[in-house]
Length: 158
Image (cartoon, rainbow, N blue to C red; front, side):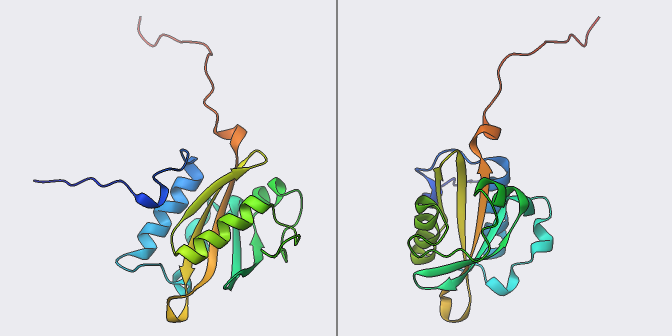
């Protein structure tokens, strides 16, 4: 058996992803199947029950996307209720997150970034004519990703 491992160039230079963001990326890859982009009509939030608190959904086209859904943890990281915020300058989203959403939409590939103590992953979904009409965004607190060292060692042997 020959196994050919290839680096995923879309996230090759990105920092390591949290388990939540990794799970969202796996969902995106699975939804994509053999397509360039997964179809937005096949995006089912019921498949993302565990990740929902960390999710934003941005709907739109071209250079303007609007947040239409925000999980509780994601909203908390953004400092309140982001529903209605857009990717237009000064419209309620951090600049780095706006750039990430627009990059994913324009490049038709996942984009990741971090800002203000949070890490995010933007995953594009396409509608008619292979244009991105939904970006699934995962947001996590960077502090919750830190590996904690130390603690107590308990011997399980006698």
